[in-house]
Amino acid sequence: MFKKNANKETVKDFEGGGNNDYLSQTGIYQDVTLKAVIFDEAANGGAVINFFVEHNGVDQIVYGDLRVYNKGGKDNKIGQEKINELLIILDVDDLGEPEEMDLPIGKKKAMKTVAVFPGIEDEEITVRLRNEYSTWNGNIQEKSAIQKFYRNSDKATAAEILSEDEDIQLGGKFEKDFEYDAETPDGNKYDEITPAQVSAWIKAKRPKGTASAGATSSASKPSFNKPKKKFGGAK
View (cartoon, one colour):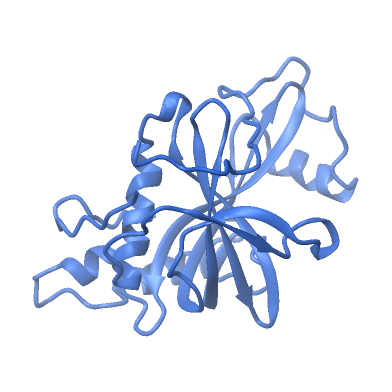
């Protein structure tokens, strides 16, 4: 379904640390164990990829806003590029077709049936996340977006791994990103909402109806379904 593209002209780094056990705050998280790659498909043909990981002894599901198919099954360029980066980082040529598996990711760690790509388990990676805040139907929306994957052993990015430039330093992009996050008090992204509004909303335990009156986001909120029993080929 997803095959690695090792064309260095299409795999590039863009200029732009997490310190919690849970991958929930903006920052860089090292020594993350990737336990399962989950394919979540919607009835409208759209699909996202989520990750079941372990970090500092804590198992968790990471919803990294990694959309790989838009409505109708059309490729999402950004999501496809990020998955390709992950394949390069892991030195994997092809994810293959997803298979159903029960994972403890439901409410109170209840087992839930999801679609998982086989062969990807217990892989060590480093991940950079960014929290993004916007408004939708008068409510504040919060999501974590995966910004970058790094190879855990040397912190190299996919672009650095593919580069034939002898002057390229493996882990150089990681050092820049880490320094940026350390020097930036708030690396979150805000769209038509202020940091002060978000801070008050979080302090109030994220109530509904707290966004500015009449504010809506540019995209509709998707609803993802339980994976189908039978999966087709690549979209």
